Figure 1: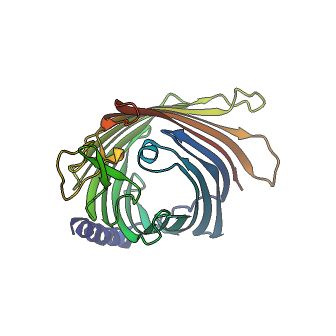
Figure 2: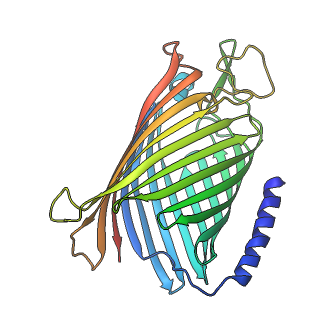
Figure 3: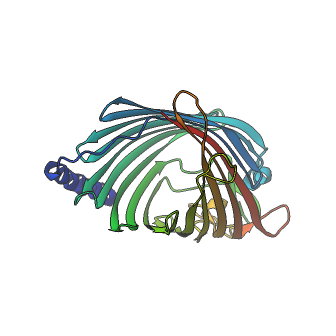
Length: 371
């Protein structure tokens, strides 16, 4: 109810802003095409595949987009190898978007659907970005609703659902000609089957089915600052805090910066925009999480994502224009790599008897064209 009330008040306020906003217009996103290949490898799980995006203006004030994303997953993670058999599957996701510029506001409607053998998810969303005070301030409001179907490849009789609601509100403020800051609030609500039909918990060392509440609500606050450094660089800082009705509290801190390395495209070392960041994350465990429970309770889980853990991520990305004469478009190449280290304080690796930890590697290669 609190999230719904917040959304209604914010929407009413936005209606007032649109009514009195000046006639200065914003632009819809430029025509663009992207092709990406991604790889994730960590914790016994690998996922890889291509992704494609095409964006095209339909009129001066309207732009449409379509995307396609593939994940070929091979899963032998700690949860799987200790309670079930490793598996392979493919997830396909399609997305559609529509951007509409209304004076100095940009309205975005989106739809996505993903399919895999035991899970189907559909999401619709609506976002509005409104410039006020001569473009010095931008107010963002958004809403998404997801509807999922949960199945099991080992139990053909099992079938359940999950529903998700997300409400977003944020403000971005230009502080000086070289610095800006944003503050965002997110409220989420979930209901239905929120666990995994394959995951087991432990009570006195014996495996029992996982039992989770069928409702969950959470809040997240994110603060971000971004500023220019010199003529060709920038730096940023971000702080995010999350809490929910399952007792989880999580803090994420990110520090990063970007630097342009010259503009001579005839040299391999020139024309690059390099971005680097460090991300630190920590969280406590859920109220009903137990590595090895000593009593039966109404709710019980051994999902490591609901346990207490810390993670460290190091991110590096490079982007460079390409001198290509294909279709009259401006081509760009980008590559990104992220290393992540996860350390769990109260989740035992049953194979070794010690606290579980693992590394993960994420690689993305992107070719894009503005036309």
